[in-house]
Image 1 (cartoon, rainbow, N blue to C red):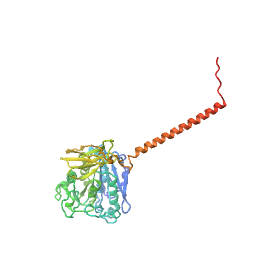
Image 2: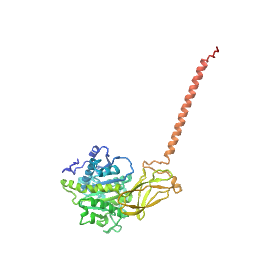
Image 3: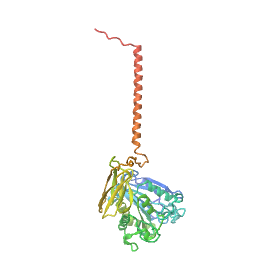
Image 4: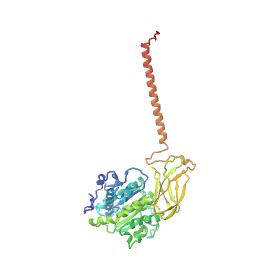
Length: 426
């Protein structure tokens, strides 16, 4: 069982204990899948409204991707405890709990951890098991590991804005791309390179000594420049989930002594908190609406000059776009069946709120009903509801008519047996 004082038995982590510790701030630990050997992959969501959809950015932390890098799982458990203990006491904890949905998966590779080796029970490196953009590896889902499939399903279910995986063996904040087209060791930046460098710097500069690195300038590095990998989770998140993910190496030593874990936690504490808080404190946030109905719509948001887009949520039409501050951007909101709208903004250090109201473009696409998060068709639902009310009305009317006819019949029968007396004039 995890000990809150980070005692020498720290490496024996038991996640379901969270189910009874932080009542009200989290929903009970849920499993997003199972490992090769059947161990649940436990996740805890921390929020003031856990389990509910809100127009807020969502962030996820994942630890122990490699079984022989256990520091991340211990630090993430301590983060969960600290946030719940300090909610309404510490301003940063309160900001995160009330304005984000934080998901924590302390261990993605419980089997590898138990075996004290890098790969999972099948000895597969999970950070090489995702579909790759440059080379057609792992394209057959049947050949992917169950832990990999669980992450891919989770990303499709949740609308994550950003995330980070915690590793060990170095001290640096790594950002995409992780590989290059020609497999050479070189700087290979993604379309959101400036935003990723900003995110990595937020972590590095908040760390005790990461930014002082002699090996990595500023304590950050492009993955392909450091050493190229293929089939990594970081790039897949960005391409297929619109989720800005960092790979964080938080300890030079993979298996530090248990007595050193508290030091590592303290060195990374502000980095983790500031990284999550940056989703609220910076960037562009807003909602996308349809002008004809006033309803939120799941449109897309693009920035001119940046070849990537993010999607607004289906429930609230909210978007959360990470951008490097201190620059001017032309932001474009669009959706099929609507006329795109664009505007130019100057993004300072603080976050900017920007809503879009899109006009239908007059094509048939505008009348196409929009699916919602439950998979229902909102265009059909009102019709079904109206039809149900009509049938209910007719049923009630028929029932009242039957009662009326029955009443008339009984009155007529009584009058036939006892005719009324004629009034007498006096």
